[in-house]
Length: 459
Ligand code: NAD
Image (tube, rainbow, N blue to C red; front, top):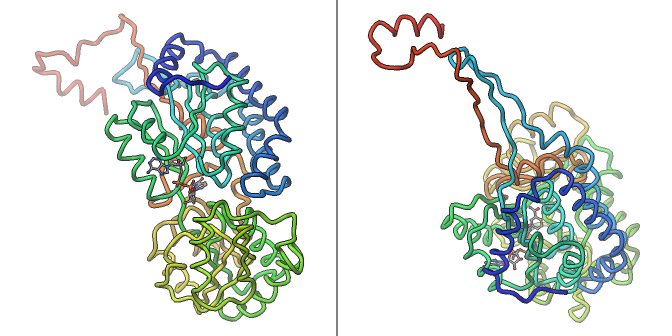
């Protein structure tokens, strides 16, 4: 049954539940994670259906990027949680002896998780895995733009957990703002950079720590020393997966001038191989989430010259996989996050030029560099800053559970996945324990004649 109580009442219930200490128990946490995994497996067909209803996401993509990606997080956490929850010893200095020091992980309390619409299932439930693992209670606010998936998450959570422990509040901006008016112990937000600023401002009023998983323009540099076919396939996949509505999709290409024409041809070939002559008929190609985004992207199609694609169907909210050339760097297409199936292709003469283009823009969430040349790889790594980097592929770095995932600068702050998720929702409490014996009394006044002793002792 879905909850009808008010937001402050729900928060109050969660505070009371958290105060019982139940969520701190390791076995309780493991049990809840297993329940979540089993619920996801039970609901798998419904998840595919909801994502299909919302924006015709292909079941294959729903399985890998939403269902499987979440259960992978659960599996990894189930395997390691026992060691993560243990207090860790810290060394003590000679001045503290006799004493022992340790770091004790403790849950932050009641946390709020707000999600976007593009991977609407995974981006709510993967952070929840970290919140549960760390021993928190949680309120989840899925995106209103994907209502079928939001409703599905609400049902799945209501049938799996005690609402005083984990609950879902559905709604849009107004609901989100009502939630943000409350005091939480952590806010985990995934969404756009502009809204990220609103979240941080609201959190500041309560001094609530935030994790901001934001977006931006993730560049993809293509050097001339590459395997052309593999490069084209990997870029095509990363860009047109979910019809380009992926926070880490390559937003634009910076291509070495020597390789631009052959790469363009190879990208065209890959688009044809993946989605056929008419991608509108392909069952493997998603739709734009709503009319507003369809209109926004349609405006982008007027910029530069279309090298392939450009076809649209407003009734279907379909936009063909599109490659665009000769785009002025100052145009909106090259200033705003595209978040759709349009790939502008820019060219460069020297790698320094490409690096400087990136450095003069906000720090991206992901950066892609295709090159066989190890010293050029080092040059890019040493001279650019981004949330993450994937060399010779796109998006695949997100699949490595042991790599923290998060942005830097405009693309966000904080990170998650694997142990980093546990860390995000944990307060590491420092504890020093001293016995009553062994006191030197050196630190106590009167200090007369003690300075020499202290200096000798501390070295
Ligand atoms: P969004 O910021 O518009 O919305 C995200 C959430 O915030 C939604 O639940 C929405 O209801 C809420 N919200 C929107 N406006 C609000 C406001 N004024 N006050 C309070 N809450 C508000 O983002 P979106 O359109 O759903 O998602 C697309 C963006 O998210 C892109 O920029 C993309 O790059 C980014 N994104 C980032 C990641 C990541 O992991 N870093 C993943 C996916 C998407």
